[in-house]
Image (spheres, helix red, strand yellow):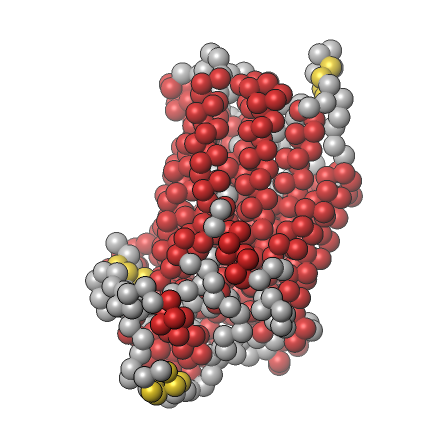
Length: 553
């Protein structure tokens, strides 16, 4: 029996029922045994501890997206480029596309719930002779994309904190500026501190992480609802519905239609990292079911809450030009100030900072588990060190501090060039989404050679059309987001994300041909299914665990 056949045999029992069926009655010991057997049969030992429950997994998935932190941080871009209507409808349509992409990702990771996420799936949807290079490129795109994302969140938290400091400094009516304006050095140094604090949290035991993460979603959602109500009540002379939903502008210089497409930046930066939840699979009970469902519910919840926030901000944007050019550097912060003054505005802004910090912690967790999985397969220099699991916390602490170091190093670039660091941050969404799309494409183009056996979450007859829509959208929006946002194009406003993307491609392929192809063989899975003894006796190859199934439509 070859390797892929053995893996198909493992998951084949997980896809034949039309609805969710849990025959284990919530017995967590039984569920954990099934999880460990599946992981062993996929090819890895259970080195991490499974403490994430259904609720904490959903809370984690919502936190990775973190709309209350991300929407205020990015709201200025669509508002200035396409106007209020572009902001509102870009988020609306973008969140629908996010649902389609996440559904395609969920089906794939449900079949192979490991810390490697989509990186691990790659090996099992392409022929053996191509598996290594596919896994190598997808792995590096995913790891570097996530690392840039974590760095950008850390930097954004720093910007949000310093914006609050500006809001509370004295204001000069003559110059229209605050007495305190943060420098690039101050923003970078604070981002280092924030990333290190995130690293300390991510170094905790999985049980402690489960307890902390449980609170992320309630705070995110409840604070969002409260802030929307407060802004709508406190803001005088709100904009009309006609203005909010129909007023488009050409703030980019590319023309109104293309300005609308550029307005997808906010939703694209927020609604990505769909497989972040999957990277926690080896620490989640019933990961093959709970991971995909958490991803889908998180995208739904975040899409609704994000649209609610965007619409509210547009209604409260009473002086469009003044808000876009706010001396705080954050249009959303100016909206908070206008509505509630320094005290009330700062109080609401505190929750924006808090939720964005939660997002950074969650994104760093996913990134560290990806680094752990990639190094476990020998893809990184000093892989044995980075893949080591701490004997006390039973978590990959070494990988955590590798990511802390890399993200701090990336943010250091901002001291010398904000243009360069923005280019690196801008590649986050395209790099991650393209890595997902590549695996989805591989699954379809090699379908005649590699039989894909879905896990509990399956799209059924909708798989091919949804996959086609997802990949088409990712290609289109990735190209759009590589364009400069302003015309005429200058050295200062040029979008260098395409250069960073090219650098990632050259780096991964160059290293591959320079020597990695001789040493890296792809995810290290067992060649044959092995019999694992259960409490009832031997668990043979024709007695697979019954996970039930989830119909995806």
